[in-house]
Amino acid sequence: MTQTQLSGVPETALWTLRNRAEEALRPDSVYTDDESIRLYRALAAEDFDRFGPPSQVHSLRAMVIDEQITDFLAIHPAGPVVALGEGLQTTYWRVGAPEVAWYSIDLPEMIAAQERLLPPAPGITRLARSALDRSWFAEVPRGPAVITAEGLFMYLPTPEVHRLIADLAEHFPGGVLIYDSIPRVFSAMTMRGRVRLSARYTAPPMPTSQSPRQARRLPRMIPGVVASQDLIPPLGRGRWGSPLMRRAANTPLGHALRPSLTLLRFAD
Image (cartoon, rainbow, N blue to C red; front, side, top):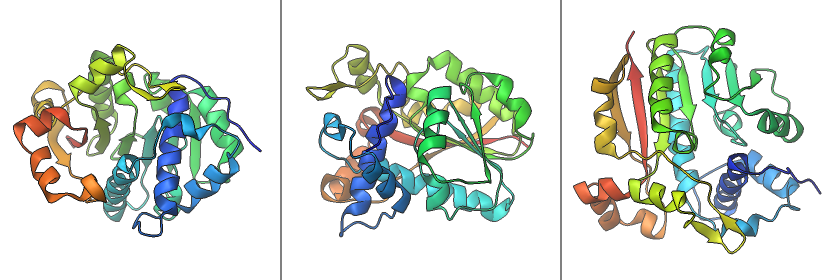
């Protein structure tokens, strides 16, 4: 059986993979992710139980991002799609392995894991760089692109995130950026080592948080950003499907306490 030997922030790719695969395996789920299931089973030697009970959060996030990529490709059929910190995401296969230019930018150990574990995909160019290493810009054409940063920005310093967004807006005019954020209270807990998913796993420090209200200010703060949209995941099961919880999540207090998904539009 295969193991990845990932650690630190790259190890969180296993956490999100397990959650997506477990959701896709449920007979009552509307989420489909055959490649996550295949990879999850191939990595059965991993101690996935260290990530605690499965959660719907990552599959609901993935469904929103899939929809946004599909919408972008309907207008720009050739892409490109730029996946920052892609990890072991299986987005490319969920959206039908489109014939577009798809760039996966991640740390060398994660790119090596992708090449070992994921199917051959001639349309994907894998670049072993940090998202903050701007040298990868030279290998991706300038112009409109759909950029994803799934489970990434919370692990980076806030000033670096804002500078990166400004540079993305300059290099990809007319493009969009989709990323997720955590609330400030959760960020503070991770910085104190208090987010323990189990006795064997503590979530890494996440210094950057963002509320929907803060996201709305970004067009006034970051050059090249012209619009910000709070993306709402589909309803799930249990508390994830509660209309009462949905209403509470969209109150001012709820905005401060819930995770969020943001779409930024860049000036042409």
